[in-house]
Length: 434
Image (cartoon, rainbow, N blue to C red; front, side):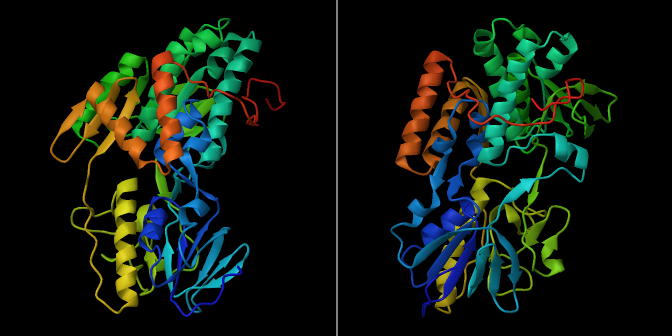
């Protein structure tokens, strides 16, 4: 990897997500050589991926170059590659561009979409965990309407304008609301020769309520807002299959659709090489202790979504969200310096700052430790928190200006098919790819 030798301890961080960036910032100009590795050269602000998918923001406004994060850090290096294996015996990682020795290894690889073993759904549904996936969804949404304009078959037209979202967590709820707003204010102007009133947005949730990780008050408010926007919520319904044409469920309800967006769950994205007992197979997360040390290792750590720190309060590990990752990253940065100096480490204690979700214009729900509220004020709180959480002044400014313009004009000018998404045609279409 062409990393210079150093008499300092080498800390290798795999992953430039929330946890990796928080850790990197804490290790800035400390007495250690740090190598940050990621398969992308940018950090993604995942909470706003749905706005890229629906044309509210361009991809560049929620991405930030990893090299720019560390460009003023001493003895700090970035390498663009994927890590394939960990050789724990010889303390080195094996990547696509070569091997690298480590003194301390931090795994912050995040999570990936969980299809729960259903290969048909994995093959035919759309995921939304990365910027390329969000751009694919944006292209497919717009291509569906372009195709609907051309077809004279009403069943085919309806299927192209029927969107099924599986999973009513924050991502599913926010995406459903954004699609509903497109239907209400944008698509009818873009496609005057289509009856946009026939566009359907179906949100399917296997649990007993939407936003089931939030308070019942916020859950009820979110469902009320979704209904107001015209979203059909199917609660307590589990999707059993999707063959590219028909969505089947356990409730004898089916949907004919050209587009299924899967937001029903995530699992860890582990790297091969660790002991089998270090992995929680159910969700592919790595078991860690209160110092984020991987079970069975003293010099390997895991952070964020990939880490399963089982406590009394969180018997299945902390929520796979940004805040646990950021807090773990910050503390581990301090602990690694203590470890290098042979000082005792401080155990991690998660501070729950609350959760929130936006459903649409002036509609959001917020759960704070002592307060739960919804509506316009919650929407402003959501915007402020997300705006200030973005990395880089330019991104903050661009997102703010986009939001202000979209609010005043009730428009989303990012509805561009920059790179067409090639998907095998809906079963009733021709055999050619659209």
